[in-house]
Image 1 (cartoon, rainbow, N blue to C red):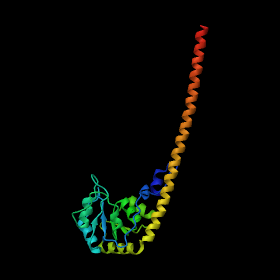
Image 2 (spheres, rainbow, N blue to C red; image 1 turned 60 degrees about the vertical axis):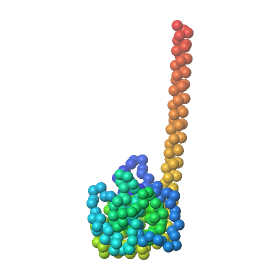
Image 3 (cartoon, helix red, strand yellow; image 1 turned 135 degrees about the vertical axis):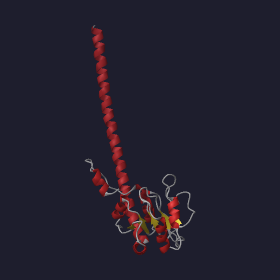
Image 4 (cartoon, helix red, strand yellow; image 1 turned 60 degrees about the horizontal axis):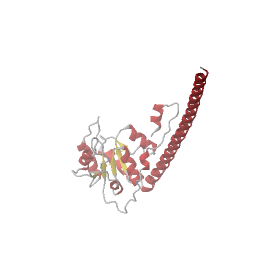
Length: 231
């Protein structure tokens, strides 16, 4: 999904760098004329980092009068609890609801795919995370600044949110989404054609091997029959 990862692989056969296929998710909501929610929060549980949820809650409340949790994952890696805690509520969706991010004025996210869905919905966002895949994604789409650390100050958070409102317009986000969709579609189509060509080549190779094997068997049988007749 990014050039840095491709450089690590350094495959002699080459590595194709392409956007995540989530950009092709059939998620193209038409934003309502008036977005009814002030903000949505999608935060994943950090396996090695234990953020101060009270601090995160204070960041959210400093900029938004109301926030609603927007969980993407459920079960083992559920982000429902931490998203609800930081949003300041105990209620949350029991299943993934893509319409939430299209009905809100702002999204505070930490999951990779939450960033993609926010962009597809044309919703200004800030990524609250330091994972490499999010850093690489934001660099790839030209928004490296749209990310802050979970322990950032209230002042920095406020500045970043204000910049997101100014610069992440509906038209800009739609342009980013359309560009990533085109690249992902091209990569998916190319990959599909490569697989089909490889399958065709393998079928032809198997057919040739089968023909040669059968010819050798027939020759062996014929030679054996002649030997028996001579004997």
